[in-house]
Amino acid sequence: MDIRSKQKVLLTSAGSADDANEDDGLRTLEMFINGAWCRSSAGRWFESKNPCTGEAWARLPRADASDVDRAVQAADKAFRTGPWSKMIASDRGLLLHRLGDLIAANATHLADLEVRDNGKLMTEMLGQMRYLPRWFQYYGGLADKIEGHVTPIDKAGMFHYVAYEPVGVVGAITPWNSPLLLTAWKLAPALAAGNTIVVKPSEHATASMLGLARLFDEAGFPPGVLNVVTGFGDEAGRAVVEHPLVRRIAFTGSDLGGAKISEAAARQFKRVSLELGGKSPHIVFADADIEAAVKGVISGIFAAAGQTCMAGSRVLLHRSIADAFIGKLVERMKQARIGDPNRPDTDVGPVATEPQLEKVLSYIEIAKAEGATCILGGNRVTTGDCARGWFVEPTIFTNVRNDMRIAREEVFGPVLCVLTFETDDEAVAMANDTDYGLAAGFWTTSLARALELPKRLQAGTVWVNAYRVVSYLAPFGGVKHSGIGRENGSAAIMEYLEPKSVFLNGISSISNPFTMQ
Image (tube, rainbow, N blue to C red; front, side, top):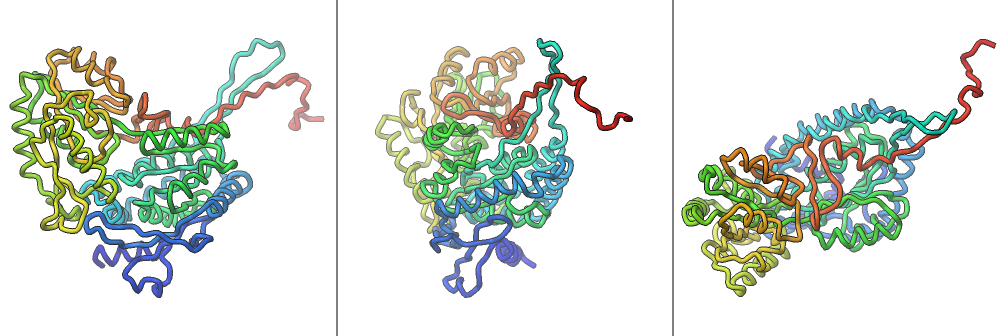
């Protein structure tokens, strides 16, 4: 069976409607609520378009508040009275392990779905899908290691302990750039902690989440533990955030979207975690390994067409090496292959959506108007493999000042700003002169600098002689406009737990049922 045949099997079992509805060539997918596949209550649909061709390939239910209510009610029931509520932590962990095994077995299928939806390179998406099981295995192992503790108390005759309990129904609103990976960062710890969840994936990349829902069903999760509602942010997303039974929101997206969600959640005193944008600095010092740093800068901004929240979109070069570094960078990127993300030799794929294409091109024009010099790229690509899709040339600007919009606002495309500095203090000041604080990276052979600078850089993650490295073991998140809370590592599971303080008085007078009468 070839990949396309496997793809049809996956989609059919992940909520595809009757073939009679596919005479226009589109696959018809359905939502996953309370363990069953269903359409929207209003019978509305929207289309998913392939960024490589610009053509629609699937239709999905356009959920509204009534559909979200069905999903939340199912999640609340599963949390309070269903089998999930009675399941011991070790058994929850076993289910997460089983899910990880199923993801590993279906990695190629899931990667193919993501490439169709968001246009990212198959080589990158397949790597992500093969790594994805680690999240469910890791948190599956943590599920039965959530331990309370006994505390000394200053009250005579009192016994006191702290227990950690799941918060309840979690609403997860996830992005289009790495849909399953960034959803797993929320799903795995939330479920390990004993919560249930309603996921509203991006309308631009939904199919892979439905593919994952099929695997949840196959793994044996009880109905209502995972629910997936598909649709738009101002309809389904808003309804998830505002539903009174949703007790916690986990969001990945723009800082503007995060601010709106935070404001709406605050009206009901809901906890939030927000993994937002970045304008991350990538610093190269004079003593750096230049060849390695060039590769790191390329990986940091161009490998994913700039569509990562941690993209190293500002490169800060020591003035003494700037010309040589820029020369090597431009030479390397002139050789980059732009085109079909399914080809193993493609280096840069399309941006994910047509609005994003227009946004990236508009920022390129803004940079030119502000006086930055475009030394590479700057145009839409409309030839060869790129004739119908949403492709932008890898673009590099020099003569950039840190107060320019191109250096301060998140473009989320294959656009790199080059700035220069003279001293370490100047580099740190420039790096920190931003509203964001998600990530930073720098290249040096100085051990003293490698140990000192991470303390001075205002970022949730700092890479030294590396870039764009993440792990299920390492907490990830930002400061300033880059968000609230942390994902990954043991810290993430605490985001989905509430501490409960319990005082016991008069223990000696409580009858013991095991005492002989």
